[in-house]
Amino acid sequence: MQNRSPAPVMVLVAAVTFSALAFGQNAQTQHPEASKVQNATAAPAPFHDISGTWEPAGGPGDGIQPYGVKAMPNDGKPEHQLPYTPYGLQTYKSHRALIGPNEVHLTSYNDPRDTCEPLGFPRANFYNLRETQIMQNEYKVAILYEYGEAWRVIWTDGRELPKLVDGGVLVGKEVREPRFYGYSVGKWVDDSTLVVQTVGMMAEDRVWLDGTGRPISDQLRVEERFHRVNHDRMELTVTIDDPKMYTKPWIAMNKFPLRLQDPHYDVTEMYCSPSEMEKYNKLFGSPASEGADKPPGQ
Amino acid sequence: MRKSAIGVLALAAGLLGASSPLFAHHGTAVLDTSKTLTMKGNVTEWDWSNPHCLLQFDIKDESGQKVHWIAETQNPAEMVSLGWGKDSFKPGDEVTVSLMPVKNGRPYGRIKQIVLPDGKTFVTVKEGLTPKEIGDSSGGSKFENYPKQ
Image (cartoon, rainbow over all chains, first blue to last red):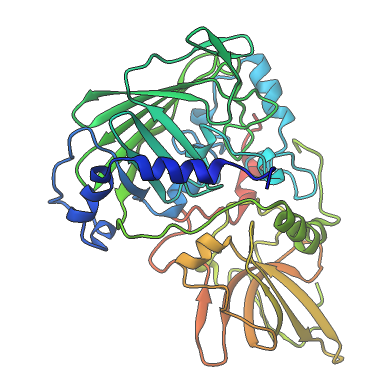
């Protein structure tokens, strides 16, 4: 029991302590299955409220993003080339991804995802973004991702964004450690748009930006704009600013459409299990790849 | 590939092409995406787990020898949305499996659809959605013509 992760307990505590109003609002107004259909007459967006279970409006593939971030897929097209710094490009080339123009076979990848490392942020937005539960109260917004059953908290209580310093972030006078899901602060910029800034993520040896091996570093700053278009629809825009890896900020998700799910929908588990991964590789991955491997970058 | 397997009912390039399987965990580099094999056999194990569910089944080749196949689907969360479940198959069930085989000729592949004797069909793509809409990256060789970054 000592080694047991506290994460599930923390999520439960967080969920229980959130305002009942935040949970109840959608349940009262959202008819089951209504969210499945484009609703041209949807009610207006509620004031300062993005709570609910959200799913990609364009279908699951929109959130899986197998070719990398939605707005800039790693498909080799000139218009999708990222503004790498020399170090960023070097780091990208050191990543052996299973998907993309430089994809390698199952026996030679080094995606941290496949050793069940935490996906981290912002990759949680860029890989298998599926049913996403958002809960909020007057102090914070919590996002529960289906993939990896991961969660993060966005503070909306007026606190300042921690400052990036050597070794982590400065919170007050205390240097705090980098986190897989960073440190997030959100501010409402109008009645229905929450802008979230996040810093303090893990360094490049622990996390990737997307499934095609694009890099991020501990110098990364992410801006998310959650714009609730109406009661049933929301758009998410994500901007990447990482001077260590990229020469300028760029948009990874551009008004990505989300639709409100039935509030009674029970989200399926989607996890990475080391034992199941080992079994999969032994039974399928290794024999299926045998004799077909090729060096990275080829 | 074991060309002599009498369990292989059809080998056709492009067959079932419109229902290419959803995929997100890994690329298609190991798969021969131009082929679809359809074969009849009996389930030995249905493994409902991440990152991909695995169906193990036996067929018989022309000489009557048993050939053991292992084929993958997507992850459970995805398969639930397609109507598959932990109890969809049990050992001994007769199944007609259509799959994309791996390139190395061994009895492995990625499932496109499974049909039971009563006609019940399990597909790997939602009806009405295009492969692009579901994030299908089958035919990953399309990257081969793109410049490397």
